[in-house]
Length: 280
Length: 156
Image (tube, rainbow over all chains, first blue to last red; front, side, top):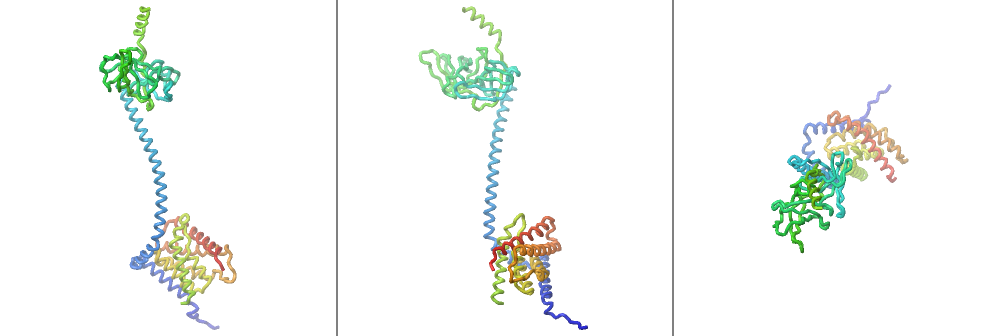
């Protein structure tokens, strides 16, 4: 039996592999024990040079993604801002109304405007209260700023209101300083002016003077603000003057208000009837 | 050092640079192919074991140097070539089928990544389970697919 010793050339790959693995292990150990620092610095510098052009592409792609994200966020934030502004405005309006209802001596019923017909011909508003809430025809509607109109139709749950911008609307009013009274109406021409008629030319009227309901007609309670004087014009061939008012309430903006549970005083009504009978 | 060897080293460095600069950024769900491994398998098919071992160690070293791994790839690739050299089909006369290339690369790649992860576990660098499976299966499959594509478009 012959025994043959292996030659080095037979095992050269094994030896080479072992040497290479030992070198690799040495590198790993040195790396994790803080060695090779200078070599690592060189390799990192070289790697950075190689990566730099691609990094710009990556940054550009990232910027595009960020841009898309920010545009989406911008739309969402604008939407949120818009809703917050609307909520803020509504909050302010409701606070004003709350303050008004707590200070007012009138019997008020809060309503929301659920329909608006402001087409300049036969303007009307619809509110969410009716006969079930004891709302009756003729009751005035007000907001915290002033008079809006009066109820002309009442059904269960809803009522229709004739606003001051309606040619058929009339309200007895007076100038706050002089107490001179007249009739406020709308000529159907301008959407930001009311007219106060039947005030004698002898009465001095300043612009800015406040006009309120007089209460003389027994249809509206007294001292509800209507508007302020913007200018006056003498009526040709008459002893009275035409007073133009800017109403306090913007009909196009209102969303809620109060129905004043005001009913005409029957005693006054009877006296008026008796007076009319006497004249016959 | 003859011209052919120089050409092969240049080719290897080219593969390495493409891997570092391009394929490292072409990740799909976090997995990336190893182009250097594809080159090494191709080289193993063409040349003897000693040359393949030296090429694997050199490429592994360069890869480590650029990625700051220092020894990890060198160890993995050297050990891999040493162990799988005899099992890689070396029929130079017949062009291999795409399926054969895919399967060979998948097995080699799985083996490579297993060694790599085992080594990592020893070094306690990576311990996340998700990373383990993604690296082992994901990277292996991706590498095998890329190798199959190269085989598809390679001219004789």
